[in-house]
Amino acid sequence: MSLDQMWAGWRSEFVESIPSSQDGCVLCLLGTLEVGVESHVLFRGEGNFVVMNAFPYAPGHVMVVPYNHEGEYLSLGDDVVEENLLLTRRVVAAIKRAYNPDGFNLGANIGKAGGAAIAAHIHFHVVPRWIGDTNFMTTVANTRVLPESLDSAYNRIASELNS
Image 1 (cartoon, helix red, strand yellow):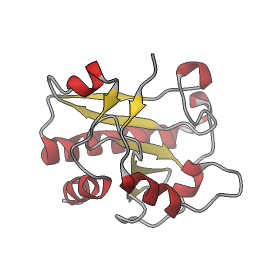
Image 2 (spheres, rainbow, N blue to C red; image 1 turned 90 degrees about the vertical axis):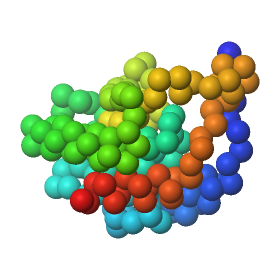
Image 3 (cartoon, rainbow, N blue to C red; image 1 turned 120 degrees about the vertical axis):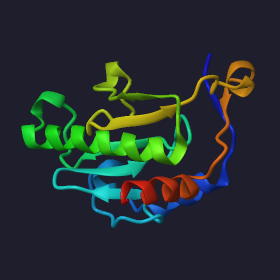
């Protein structure tokens, strides 16, 4: 059974705003954009950046992404991995303040067999979760409904991330 998507016009505006990158990797391209609501890039570190997920599982779903175009976790440098973990912890704290979720899903889908949509560029998901957050639309219609736009989620998290 496949998951249907409900149309959301703000998504096409976001996707169309991203120019094609030379190698076709949207994560590499996002890593070059300035922090701001237009790009949905929340923070730029030395080896990683934080960006809103364009197709979130829940409101406030972000990704912590190494700049390195690398699909193999073990090939990332220790400094990149350490910063990634520290940024993930910082993002969790910001989302807790912004949304007060009941829990989180943290993780990465590594490789095509691991479920990675972009297998060539590893990235780490931070997904806030609430007890009972699977509503009837997901259960009955196999469709996910999000109550908030990416811009609104960006603004909520950005204000907490930078406080």
